Length: 58
Image (cartoon, rainbow, N blue to C red; front, side):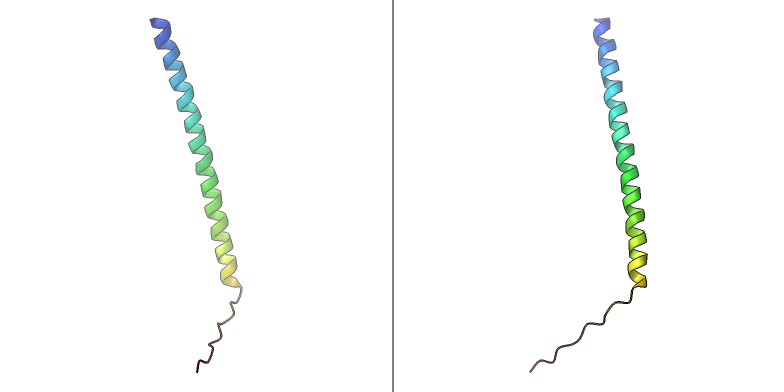
């Protein structure tokens, strides 16, 4: 019975460490994506945008 508890505890710790690693990895990826989007947004704001031409109806 004691071995089962130890095995379950080890399994739980391994799963927890794996999930924590995944969360850390995805957090890094999201932060990197946010910084890339922020940099591209500022770059897009520097490029002059063409003014849309109004079409004459009628």
